[in-house]
Length: 266
Image (cartoon, rainbow, N blue to C red):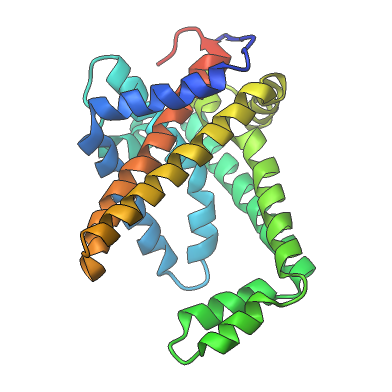
């Protein structure tokens, strides 16, 4: 299958954010259900000893692909559903499935390198802080002390920066493998090239979602506080935040069709 790389204006980034929110309005329960299934699967993977965390990392490109396929189905007049998680594996083409598995493995490896480098920079401060926060025995003073640990901020910035860098080649790669029939290396290169050419648009796209998610989170927290829901506020907060995160993943499809025209797209 052939594809064409498009020239993307900077303003397209905000249009992608709006397009994601508009698409989310069409099928809020369907997309929210897909995200709920994804959360459940991630929790199951996370509960597995030793192999759980690496498998969670490896599944990230598949979550991206699932939402892209869901939005693609919606644009073709179909209602999106959780079947998108199985679609790449039941479709004809063993080689394509092998490419997706290789891509997931590459993402897992790159992400683990980012985590290890962050841990090396902070000297394990982040791990100690997370263990303390998860423990019932840790006092507030202990947590405060760990939050002031030298290297913690530097390690956090290293993790964040490397995570952004890793996301660049993998952003469009799953869709390029499925819809443009590209190999792993070619899909990573094409994704990197597309994002490098459209960096102003992606910068606005990222900033737009930071604002949207920040405002939504603040409004939801204020609402639960105003209504004095207490612990019941979690029951309100979780579904609403799930919908907002779903909208973000929905918008990723629009970044793809905004950067590429794929001929004979399936």
